[in-house]
Length: 443
Image (tube, rainbow, N blue to C red; front, side, top):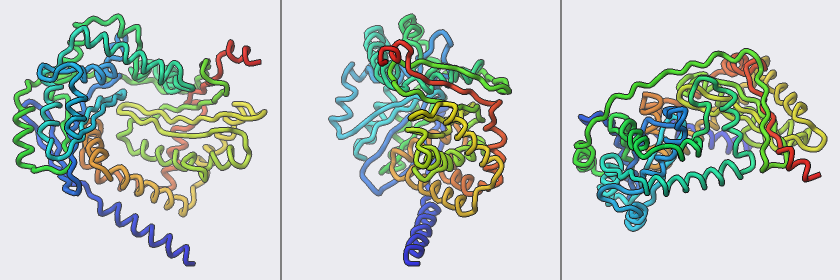
């Protein structure tokens, strides 16, 4: 009884925290079309300046893949007022950190400084946008950096090509079909003028959102935003082509040989709707039921009880236009990929035919409350969430309201969404196996 009371009190505390943690923000537009979001948090003397651009791998020319990720590196090379090689020195020399990342849908840059260096952060991000130096020496330097990253993270990393191979087989028309890091041959073939044209097209204030989060004087911050970003000219409006995939109606079968692995992996992937949909949130919950932690259904049954696999998992790969729901398993002992797939399918059928218990649903929602609290527990997390919800979802206030969507999901919805998307005739089965020559050498 004592443990039950403790658990209940913790649950009530968590629920209260999740409800109380509303993220306050202010948003407005500059005359050049740049959207600005401010979140004042005086709790610690730090501030993040971040810019998210609505450009990712899906915006590339099919003959020039890798440009979006390449620019994540290239735009640290320097500007007209920041000499080459000085960017990181300025940041660290003023007590800050910085980074950037790219997806198929967007590119994100940020600096975290002590709050008394907010103006410096704004100036640096405005320099990246207004005065980038894109020359041959920078392109050549970053080309080698990107090649090394690809060798390290993809070519020579065990299972490093998994997501790329799933995408390649899941998409026919949509640019999601190529890997975010792109093709090194395409980058080698590109001219300096092509890189400059890509920058001019996508790195414009009206294709970006500026988010400032942390300790700040709002009035002064607005003055600095206008001072540094206001004079940047508006770019041409970007016409985005809409790519619609035909439904998958027959199982796709594919094999990929990876020279970096010794153990095969079976992968089942289903095409799913945009991350903006309610269905995508339900699929998130299904992932949690199946593979979040050692008490999850797949792990407990296939790894713990039956000891048929070394690893097992399921996750939603959520994106702006389409998503993928991916299950994977690594057979062990005499068990085959087909054996593991059969066990995974059985658990999906259970979800399609049996309602989860009310108790399991409540535990599920508690986990999402916890995730919500954690995702907004730092200025870095808040800034990226604000940027993403504006740029990709079209609703900044989802930072406060998305959790209510998860809380409102029912047991019946979980069953029905599993029925709708997770069927054998709607999927890719990828046998991800060791390369034959390597496997033969091991014998």
